[in-house]
Each structure stands twice: as C-alpha cells, then as structure tokens.
Length: 157
Image (cartoon, rainbow, N blue to C red; front, side):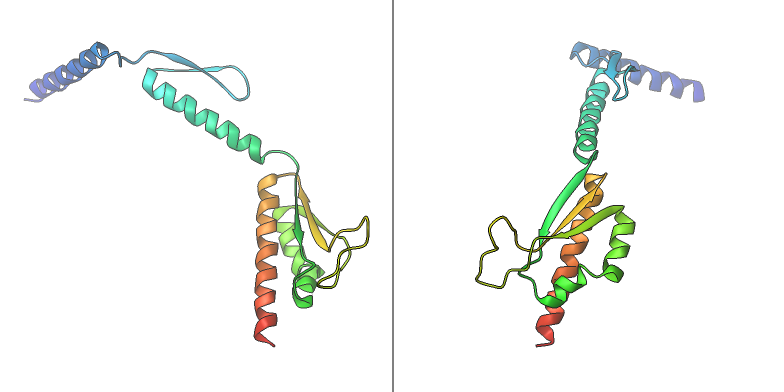
C-alpha cells in the first residue's frame, strides 16, 4: 500500500510540474547578485524573483540606515524644567550610552515673542552618531523626555 501512495504522490507532483511548464512557470535557475559581490544561484524563477526583490529592499533599508546621522531638536520653546531635563548629565547619559550617540546643546535661549540675534539660532540639541537608526531612536527618546517634563510642569502649576 505504501508503494501505491508513493506512485500517486509522484504522479501528482509530475502533473503539477507539467502544468507549471505549460503556463511558463517552470522553475529555472536564476543568478542573483549579492550585496558584497558575486552571485547566488537559486533554483526556481518565481522564488528567485521574489528573493531578488527582498534583497533589493534589504539593500535600500541598509543604505538608508548606514553611515553618519544627525538630527536637531529645537528645545527653546519648552518650559525650563523640560530644557533642563534634556541637558542634564544624569538624564542624558543613559540615552547617549544606549544609542552610542553624542548630543550638543547649541544656539541661544530666546524669550517668547522675540527673535534670536543675527547669526544665532534658538536653543536646540544636535544629536549625532555613526548609525542613522540609533540617532533616530535617541531623538525619539529626547522628544519623549521633553513631552513628559512639559506635562509634569503643567501638572505642577
């Protein structure tokens, strides 16, 4: 009985291969260029095309996150407590260490309704790092700190 089942299974597989070939869907080996150079040969045209698409998407994602990144966060218009929080060493150190980034406070404080002096900018943070995703993550954490400190400030009034 086991032999008959094997024949039926192989017969179904053979018919599926024949139908795929008739529709032009027969698997053919495809050479896919590798990111680091060289090629990878993959059997099966449809799967290879999907793999090539996925590989291209991965390459684009890698290119968008590789390399030096920097972002600015304007902090001038936040309450004093919030500005203090994102510039205080004890608060900032864990964010910097975890994300492997640097932060620099730049600009000058400008009172509400006034413009900064010529050649100056309002107070802001410059976040820099070797990885764009880590910079984005650090910026997100700084913005979250600013929002939380602003809410604390509002609650204490």
